[in-house]
Length: 409
Image (cartoon, rainbow, N blue to C red; front, side, top):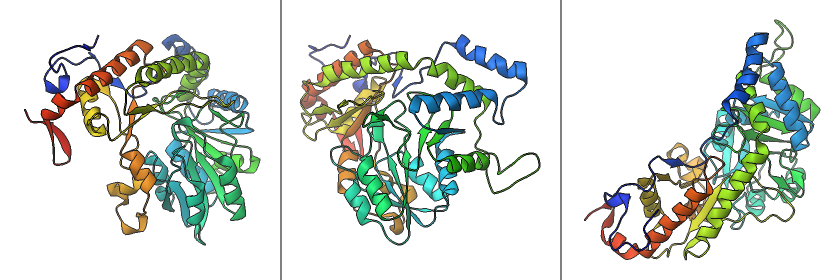
């Protein structure tokens, strides 16, 4: 599809027709057939029950608990509210240590819970929270560690658990990327005091919008169920402060439909990832992040590559612009790191996080997931190869102006 032997720059950035007619987004939603979903929704109409801890939500919670091997699953409106609900239920105060290299919802949830996020650097190999740096940030104000299983790769749960126990801290995980992934032959979902999943439409498993908190602590689960429904205990009896974080029956219907699709979803994600791994392997300056099995399972949803500074002279941000012009909507996850965002510009949030900044300047996430197909992945690899092969003439026609790459000739 993409010309490897072209004598001219056949790139959409320079006015040519895009390589793909429709945009290929990072992790486009993939769902069960509509009729499967409608079959569940019809039950809502038959019962006249659309929300407020309905039977579909309870069934979804039960099936997820069994799948993850945890005692309790509390379905919620979304993962951000789930994190806030959890921090409130744990009665956290003061400071919570979080990685900066994550989606901004993680520290936002901390702030919106009336807590102060303390940004931690990441391990240079795993890109997850660096336990050593985490330990150095603990003081008398610290009440919890909130770590993230980034791109579905598990944190150093053993070391973080030791740190939390040594300092009498709560340990919670943002597992937004990690549904169906495992660590030490145990499904992610049962580590720490609790873990929070995102079931947003672009996730490996989704309920359109939604999330869940999983835990093996029965008292905590009971508190979470109370708090997600305004603190109600029975009719007209409000026992505590709470909010509205309930999952609706319609969202649960989508979740039940997609649970039946997990094997198919996993197979498609794996095929797409492997096509990228094969196609990018021999391109100098591009390193795809491998899923090292070691007895664990992965969902293969995120196709993450690291762009070397010497990619034949093509900077990461220019590569992103070239791909986006071709309708390959690559992303700079998680750029520039939360601690460098305007929302956290106040001096109290500032930290020296050299590994986070180095990685954030080099990462590119390519369209992956079950809605992609292996052939498109191979064509994107050819496009990247073409760009690298034609780096010199490309660089002659662009300049960096006001921090952005512009076509100048």
